[in-house]
Amino acid sequence: MSYALSYNNYEMVKLLIDYGYENDIILAVNEDQICLISELDTEIIELLYKCYDAFEMTITFSEDSILLKKMKEIKNNLDGVNISNRTILSDNSRSMIEYHSNYEIL
Image 1 (cartoon, rainbow, N blue to C red):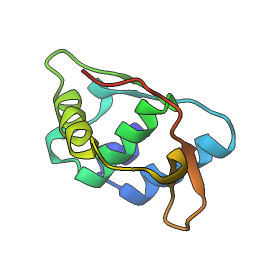
Image 2: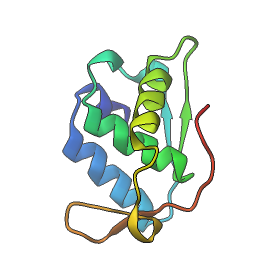
Image 3: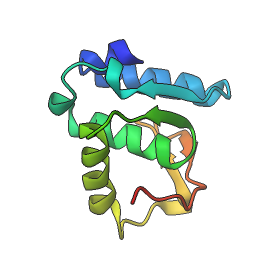
Image 4: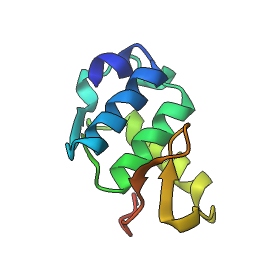
């Protein structure tokens, strides 16, 4: 996952997340292993946030975390957005992850 994130590769990140979901694998990300976090696409950060928020991924944030700040921005943008059936859909309209969490990034 760190490789896909370091190369800002949305497709690879999405494939890894889908694979983890389909095989009941909780993915782990360590922010210190990601290069150029400040240049990550918003779509990738949104995917990470949704997986983290649904307890499908663990993230170890670094001190003074850029990723955490970006995820807070995503959270603020998603507040008030109605996710139908509390499910996040992948590009092919199949369920990617169930949005079952009330956990919030503060």
